[in-house]
Length: 137
Image 1: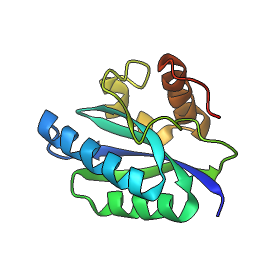
Image 2: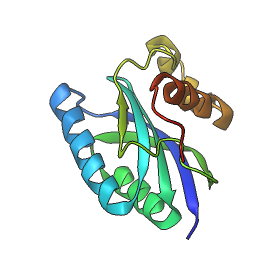
Image 3: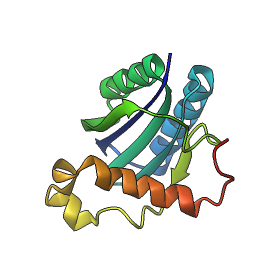
Image 4: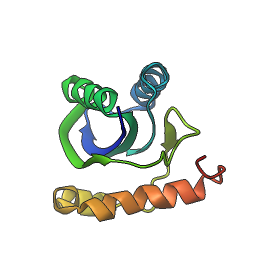
């Protein structure tokens, strides 16, 4: 089965530090089990997540997230085959600053709904560059 990449956004329901820590712990445990790597950009008003791994496991992860009541308005922005992992060194890289994504006002004005695949991919490209990890092998 080939490598697959998906990027989705959702709106947090009941966001606080404890909930975020729970999501990150759940994601890292499940991702290690399912051979998924990725990154999560999050704030109180948005989750934006990159998942990469075997296509079936990425699909199962997206289905699980869609059923999770901590996520509202799950929107899939990218779903495509990939030739290599971009976040190979992380079960789930967490970016709490999220400084280069949309502002809160832009999110409130529906920037997420208008986003292109290239735009959301660029956010993660910047995060990958800023992480200072070795290039994927």
